[in-house]
Length: 628
Image 1 (cartoon, rainbow, N blue to C red):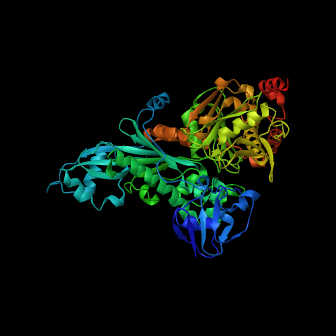
Image 2 (cartoon, one colour):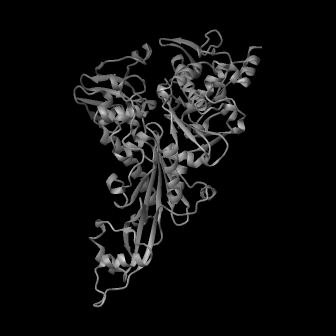
Image 3 (tube, rainbow, N blue to C red):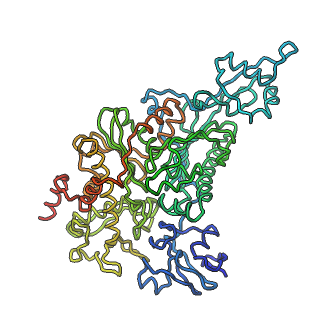
């Protein structure tokens, strides 16, 4: 039995396998935010000929069904079939999506009172050659020289014994040791003949749920040499961490999830090393940060307990590992340091983010928020830090939204609605790109603009009598954001409800943490916004929506990818590494899922902008003007 594609490719299909599963086996990946449960409606294909057992018609209109559309995860071929895969259904997770040199980050390192002191160092030694009078073994000779240089506490692992005799003699008894500080001592991670003090490089890695970013760092002077990034190819197992954990534990995909992210990292490292002519012997260490689940997948640790009460990870602080153990394609003995986590849903990426913002060093009360596929919040100052994770769901990354997508080319990122004519103006990511969906910032703009234009009421319900763009469909009313040649891009009422639930959870996270600490929004001096989502975020629209508290705009600061910034700082400084571990152990964690006050705050947030309209005086004034 075969599945033929209109592109001309044929792939085998095992009886009982869905179209989605068969395509995945052949290396063809479709967008499947729900992980193949049939609930997201993203893996659409068109069956041109042949028959299939269609087990669900959810998310498909009658018109689409008449045209042969089917959800690939719920369609099981009954024989040979021919299918067409629409462009918007394809998931591209391969290759490098961005490279380029970035700003000088050394000033940020120095601002923390830290100098360049990489977590991995190099020592050049000139050993006295042996003689009949000085006939101790090569290892004893090395240890003696180490002691003479004040390096007596430097472990020499057995794995370096095999080639020790050849190495020390190759360059007339001059050798270079690469080392890393581990617990109470140093450990040798490489022995090279001759003076190999430089070049010396390291890789700082951010393992995001959606993307993987790698910095190539010159450890001798702190220069950020180059950057490479790609989609996290685990996306093919689902958009969010819970779906991926289910795949790992209930569908025996743990090994594949681990291999997927390691493959992404290897690809990016290979590109950077090739582009800059870097040899394997010049790479001395890797530092990685990610949320707790991504860290578990990276280290190949069982994540199953993370998703079930009482939500316990395998570890929060991880022993030093080595590249060979993780199958990272640099020297097998290169040490891999992984940022410590705080709890199941506040990971090393947030610890790294706190480092990057410097909020832990300031007297002023600050809020740190990373809005991505998860919503993590930290409040505090130099004396204390509290953290929480909001179960907002990944809707701002496009999951669960009819035409939702990530912030990539073709995504509608900005929307304006003329208050008089109600005409819609859109801004699309990518030059001269036709819109194919709507990303998180576009959703926020749309809901805020519809609310101010009177198209939405405070409960998020569409008013059919206000605009011709509001139309009734099988699943209820929807608003046409863009009229397309082949497909209109819309926000349906269930989409709007999803967005309002997500913003309510995040705002409730702010409120609950502040209440727990005895503060209000009036006490907050700074709000740091991190993550790729924040890049396109319109602060004013986010306040109108009720996602962010109403504060002067100058109090908000977009920080970019703080996870990779903190990782860069850590790879260059043992002082920063120690500080990261101090932050992770001293940061308090509040489990919002069992907090009664959080649920009360959440329910209050299920209105636009909020049940307590007096907390949003500026929005209240805009509403009055709109009513006139």
